[in-house]
Amino acid sequence: MVFIITMVPENIDEIIKNQLDKTLIETNFTGLGKLYKGKVRDNYINNDFRIIIATDRLSAFDRVITTIPFKGQLLNQVSSFWFDKTKHLAKNHIISIPDPNVAIVQQCELIPIEMVVRAYITGSAWRDYQQGKTTSGITLPKGLIKNQKLDDILLTPSTKAESGHDIYISKDQIIKENLVDKDIYEKMEETAFKLFKFGQDFCQKNGLILVDTKYEFGIKNSELYVIDEIHTQDSSRFWILDSYDENFSKGNEPEILDKEIFRGWLMETYPDIFPNIKPDQPIPPISSDIKIELAKRYMRSYEKITGEEFKAEVSDVHQRIIENLKRTEFL
Image 1: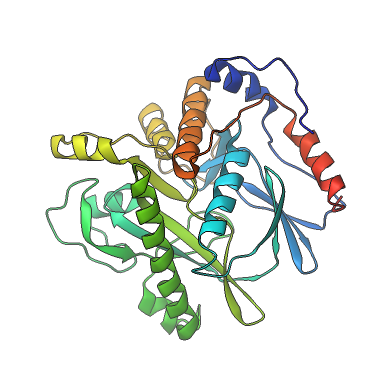
Image 2: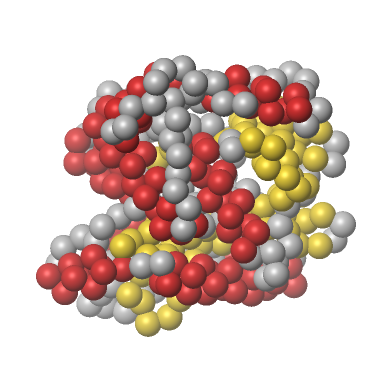
């Protein structure tokens, strides 16, 4: 059952605009289990299960900045798409998807390391490179330019912080400090490369470049599981393939279909605040125009990845989730 609030306009900008004040900011379902709030997802732990509700919260530079219409639904649906496509490559935690914003998953023991895989020099790795810093102990060759394709795919692991900034860390340091067992880490490494290569090939067929991404892992019954999300617009960068080929040689930016455009907007609009915003610093005003633009790019990437139309409807997301969870007897 979908709870329609208004007549759905034909114009997608109007649909998104009408959803701006109906975004899913947070949930508090006391009957679901112990609540843990991540930057974007509300997690309810219930014995061997975890109910993950993807809200419309948008994080950047390790702060929750605003909400974006349809974002939670888009992320949850594209992530479940990828989990299904890659289940032959690695075990993942998905059990069922009872609502567009909700995933029922296996409860796993979190491994506190994120596996960040990169095929191009951009984002935080580029910012570090400009300052002469290494990323996860890796020194890149001199003379690289922004958005250049790397000779080899890089794995730049980082700590998984509960709050604040994640910190890049080398493989040697992870093993030396026993943050992850060596055999488990090497299995994570192998799995991350397999998933990334699959994602690259799949995206290329659909006219996209999977630029970089992060993977998170957990352990259940001594087995390694891929958890959290996979190849979403939050965890990955996507460029339009043709636009990269056309623009890179001219020194221009490719067409971006992820939240990097939002990071760029923040740094351009508020250069004194971003990217080094402090944990307790007030969030400045965020324009409706950038929210609408980002929602459209999330939708476009979803459609290019899955080959399916995203049907945006102005609705009460919170009430729909309640109804769907009641039907599955989780609430």
